[in-house]
Image (cartoon, rainbow, N blue to C red; front, side, top):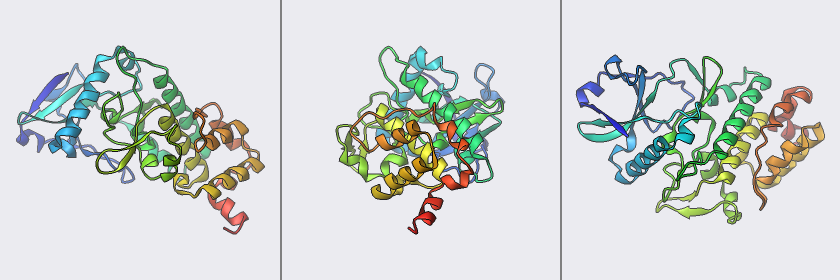
Length: 300
């Protein structure tokens, strides 16, 4: 992997990328490299990491980025914005540079914006499912990539309506521990009750789930369900979780979609509901689908 060398006085003069206020956990400053540092004619974004002094995290991130750059099968997926350069500041590795997507909308902002119709949200959820499926079907010569930190804020939509994956320095390519884990997994203790499906280990600080196809699809299913319910369903107790799915079934929501949501808490492999997610808007007014509508109906 090639290295871009900067001095601290140069970093201080770089412009910070403006992000929507709803976007969180960027792991550091997002700085726009000026024209002097164009790479292969492209403007670049420098992710100046908060964890630059943590040798273990930086070593893992460097391994991830190096492995992804060495695997043509992943580099050939245009929707993966893989960091192309390491960035050293005063001879110390402090982050990574990747192509700058100047005009974009964060998927998390779109999915959590109540002014946007469910039809449009489920279109992009379908695109996300397609991308996840494409990555899962791709094998590198020496690695198998999983997103690991899979949440809606790690995807953007460019000006041509293409869905792109960012923050890939936190992907999982077989290192000893994931660098980051999706908050959908961190905030849900129920997954510990299915150890044959979700392999939970301690990293010395907290318990983490080792990324695999089931963890990625768990997160994707939760993103879809949260969007339909307009609620954080990964925080809902198990009893109301399954009762809410029964409520959606009574409204006529696609059974295959509901089976996929149901299976994430069962000792069976998770499935990708991409082919069913964009059918949710066919069943009456979308406000009836929300978790609040369920709680009002049953006085919960």
